[in-house]
View (tube, rainbow, N blue to C red):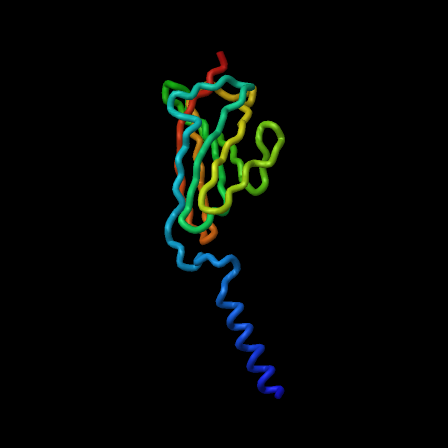
Length: 151
């Protein structure tokens, strides 16, 4: 009888382990997520101390996990460059209104929030880069330039 109970416990355990955590097939997911940035766009000009609207659609064939936004100062219109940048992480940071950044999950998500441009922001061209990672750790990046004008 002990052997039968032990055998049943092993079979039940193996059956449960083969089901996976969410029914997905993350171990075999080698497809990177996709990104479509609708705002900002190349013609976006925002003043210092105003909000830049960020609107990005992301999707994945299995499951999205997280994103990171980086904003770099590319330089003044005359091409002078600098390395100043700041980052937003979807798991820890907040938007311009002090709210947690939108989370992403499932196969499709929209990331939309206001990003306050600092009063000390240099006029010129900036690059917003988003890196999206899915549950299987596949990642992809996309970027979009916009302009800050203090006048």
